[in-house]
Amino acid sequence: MEFLLVGVGGALGAILRYLLGLLPYQGSFPLKTWAINLVGSFLIGWLSARLGRQAWFPGDQLLLITGLCGGFTTFSTFSLENLKLLQAGHFSQALLYMASSLVLGLACVALGYFLGQGKL
Image 1 (cartoon, helix red, strand yellow):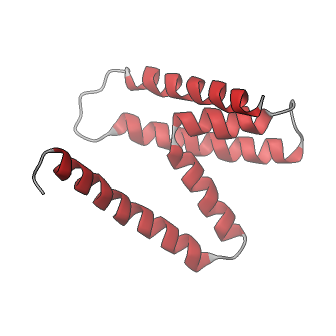
Image 2 (spheres, one colour; image 1 turned 30 degrees about the vertical axis):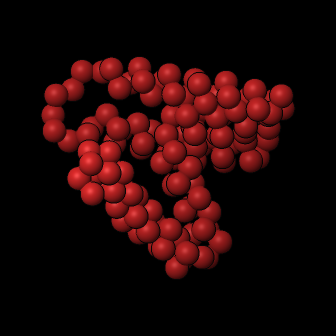
């Protein structure tokens, strides 16, 4: 049952992300992805606070936080994990996590991209 909740939530999040990605926008700044990541971050924070106080139904966190927010954007999970590190006073770990995720994530994308194009 837990797998089903995560799967259904993930599918809904991915579909929602896809639909929002269809909104018209022609600029060079990745506005839609940026907005999706910020909305997802707000949503996972709000859900975490609300569901942490009182469950709405059995499996609500699996469906809504892990599934829906995870399918919508993993940036929201990244943001929540950093907030938890900061709240726990693990400032150096949070900074390391943020900086290394950004730098190494970009490096991994570049490496995969260049390998995929046969340039390395």
